[in-house]
Structure formats: C-alpha cells, structure tokens
Amino acid sequence: MTVTRGEFRNLLKGLAFLSPWLVGFAAFMFLPIVLSLYYSLCDYNLLQGPAFIGTRNYRGLLNDGVFWRSLRVTLLYAAISVPMGLLVSLGVALLLNVRLRAQPIFRTLIFLPSLVPTIASAILWKWMFNQRLGVINRVLAPVLGWLHQPGPPWLDQSKWVVPSLALMSVWSVGNTVIIYLAGLQDVPRELYEAAELDGASPVQRLLNVTLPMISPVIFFNLIMAIIGILQVFDTPFMMTAGGPNRASYFYTYYLYDNAFTYLKMGYASAMAWIQLLLVLALTGIAFWSSKRWVHYQGK
Amino acid sequence: MTGRRANILSRLATYAALIVICALAMFPLLWMICTSLKPDWQIVQFPPRWIPEQLAWRNYKLAVSSESTHFPLWTRNTLIIAILAVIGTTFSSAVVAYGFARIRFPGRSALFTLMLSTMMIPFPVTMVPLFSIFVWLGKHTPIQWLGTTRPLWFPAWFGSAFSIFLLRQFFTTIPDELSEAARIDGCSEWGIFWRIILPLSRPALSVVALFTFMWAWRDFLGPLIFLQRPTQYTLSLGLQTFQSQHGSTPWNQLMAASVLVILPVLVLFFIAQKTFIEGIATTGMKG
Image 1 (cartoon, one colour):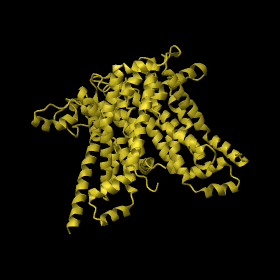
Image 2 (image 1 turned 90 degrees about the vertical axis):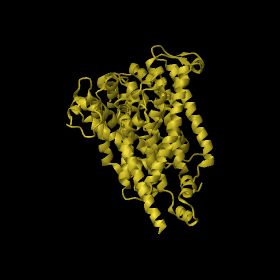
Image 3 (image 1 turned 120 degrees about the vertical axis):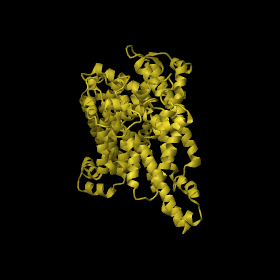
Image 4 (image 1 turned 90 degrees about the horizontal axis):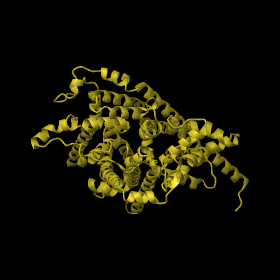
C-alpha cells in the first residue's frame, strides 16, 4: 500500500494540529504513567533516587491493615453513594421531565448545589452536621425528643461518618440530573403514544419505554461514578481528617499521606496502580454487563 | 372525566414533590447565608432563627481582612490560575479538536481512542511522578516549578481530553462545504480553523471555558501538592488551612468566606445559564 502525496500532507497537517496534545500526552500522561509503574517497584523517598526493590511494595500492601481498611471505607462509601446518587438523580430528572410551567426554576434550583466549590460545601456541611449545634439535629430535635433519642453523631462516630458523607454527596447530583434530563428529552414521543394506545400503565411505560431508552445515559453516568468514586479525597480531608478512628480514611487519602506526608513515593505508586487496576476491573464489569441491559438505538 | 382528574392530581403531586426537593436543595445554601450574617452570640441560640436580629456584615469584613487569612491574595492566586488554565485549555483543545474532527489522516481514530482512554486514568497514578518531574525541572532548568502556581496551569496549555472530546463533537457537526469553499479560495488549514470554524463554535468554546474555570476554581488536591507558602495558596487551600487551624471555629466568619467563594461561580452561572445547562447535557451524549 503506497501513501499518496495528498495523504502524506494530511498526515503532517493532522499531526501538526494534534501536536499540543501529543506533547502534553507524552510529558504529563505517558511519562508519569511509566514512571509511576517504575516507582511502584522501587523504594523512593524523593531525597534519594528510586532504588529497585521488586514487588516488595505490593507485598507490603497485602499485609498492610490500613491499606485494606482504606479500601473497605472507600468501597462502603461507593456502595452507598453510587446507587443512591444514580437513583435520586434519575427520580428527580423524571419529575423535571413532566411538562410544567415552573420547570426552568425547579431545574435551576436543583442544579445550583452542584456549582458550590468543595471547600464551601465541606465547611457548610461540617457546620450543619455538628451534633450539638448543627441545624440538622436541631430541626430533628422535636422528632428525636419524642422518640427519646439523642441526635445522630453524624461525623463524630465511626459508624455514622461514611453514610453521612454519602448523604451529603447526594446534595450535589445536579450535574447528573441534567444529563439524565437531556436523555429523557430525547426519547421519541411516539413511543409513549404507542405504549399508551396499547394500554400501558405509567409504571409499565417507565419500565418498558423510558428505562430502556435512557439506558445508555444510565450507563454513562455509572462509568463516570466508578471512575470518580475511588478518587474521593477532598471531603474527608476537609471535614473529618480521616477520622474518627480512621473510619473515613479513604483510599486516595492514605495514598496521599504515603506520598506526601511519609514520603513513601514507591509505596504510594503501588497503591495508585492497584487503584488503576480496580477502576479498569470495575468499568470492565460494567461494560460486560451492559450487553444485557443497555440498549443502543439503531445499532 | 376521571382521566382528567387523575391528570390534575398527578400534576399536583409532581409540583409538591419538586417543591420539597427544591427546598431540600436550597436549605443548606440559605442556612449558609443566614449563619454568615449572625453575630457570634446568635449562632448557638436556641431555637435557631432564620433572620438574624441584626445583620452582622462585620463577619464578611473579618473573613476577608483577618490576619490569619490572605483572602484578597488567595482570590488573586485562584483567579490567575483559573484564567491561565481557561485560556490555555480552550485554545489548545480547540486546535487539537480541529485535527481530530476535520483532517483525515491514517491513525486518527486510534489516537482519538487513546485520548479518550486517558480520561480513565486516576489522578493519583500521575500525581506522584508529576511531583518528581517538577522537582527535577526545578533543578535542571532556570525556572522554579514547585512552590509556584506553574504546575497548576502549565499542563492546561496542552489540551485536556474532556475539552478536546467536547469540541471535536461540535466541530464534526459543522458542514464540510464551508471548509471546501474556503480551501478553493486558497485559505490555509489554519485559516479555516481560525476564521471559519472557531467563530462558528462560540457556544462550544464557552462551555469548555466555563467548565475549565469551575474546575480550576474548586481544585484542591493540585494546589495542596504543588503550593508551599500560604501567600501562594488558592482559596480552596487557604480556607482549608484556616478552618483546620481553628478548633472552635468562628462559624459565622467561615460561612461568610464560603459565600464569597461561591459568589463568582453563581454570577458566572446566571450570566451563562443556558450555556451551562446545554453543555452538561451534551456531555452525556456520546458518539
């Protein structure tokens, strides 16, 4: 196969336009990924160059209780916040998809919290979750008093802290809501009319028309959630410093500490690679399962 | 007739549900504003009041000018990083997206897939080597990197995968005839990009600019790793150090500071609401 001159010119032009990304990819993505893999096989504390130690970091992690604990904390958080977030945002999007005159206002108000920078929402929720003075327990006070229960120790007790953070994460699902809403608005009206003519009830229409039609959007949001959830760092760092009793010491938090507090760069890199493999495995499972439940139109 | 009544009832129920949800969504924000305006003694008052007896604007003044915060400086730093990141990302992503969208060459789709797959790489994988790369650069080049804002905006000038993807999707919708006509008139490829495609892509470009700004404004882990002196801090990092140092926190001042951090974002949102909503909506539309 010979390359014509026109094709060659196009190749050069294409690469010229791609050059910023090609350089950036090489310098800030490819090189770091290779280095990270190498560091993960090294003893490396920044002050001295990396010294190759084989798989000792990985073997060390297998015997590191804090590592397993941080992984458990993160997966517990994921198990609560991912399904809750997907369900709540889908439900809200369904409500926003009903034809009502005030919808633009509702949509804006529901979207607003997702604009709030993490530092602001962290400070705000820390204040609201305060067991004695926080507004949540004060609003709940009459109910709790009637039940003779003290206010929940939201962030102050090991059992409560992860569910509390997951609950807080639902506050900022506005982004996901908007993505669902766009998906819902793309469902052809004829499908609903046809279903209605066939005598389908609203629930049947939801299960047999809406959900299959927006399953690609659900899948997209699921993948985004999987990629993001293992990287949760900001909120526990700002709100609980990993406590109490390391109950909110998330995976990325422990990784950060290893790298920049204890200067165990090699150990941290090994954690990063395990994290990458986890993300790949989870998205792989999602893709594999998607054949059964995601319906692409006309494909 | 019963059908119509059921219809009205279901509308009413939808309204009620949406009003409750909106109230829950707005409550924390309103509580933030309300706390930010309370004098110290009223914060712990029971039962809590919505409207403070006297509005304590003083909290805002204290939050901005207190000695342990460098609020104006932090705002300036954050703005500099955000603006440089916005210009860099938008411009370079547009150039790259043009290559992916409008020029046919062998290997294009493979490179595009490679670019998309980088979005799955967690930041922790690259953050440790990036740190050591910037340390190395500081030793071997005349430019300081670590402890400056450079690591936070410089990589943005090489495009971001997400922005390139978004812009490519938009560029492919522009009819080819426009480029062809310009080519016949002797316009260079860069000329087509600069004078025809870019002006037509203002909505997509503003989406990318807005998203990048929002991202830079709220970024925390990056500044935490790369910045060292409090005078270089961004708002996120500065406020975090401030709130973690004050055990018995001055909640009203912290709320005032938080309101101030949200304010620019809210203003931007209300200026460009349509761009925002449509931009987010398109992120879910792959292919």
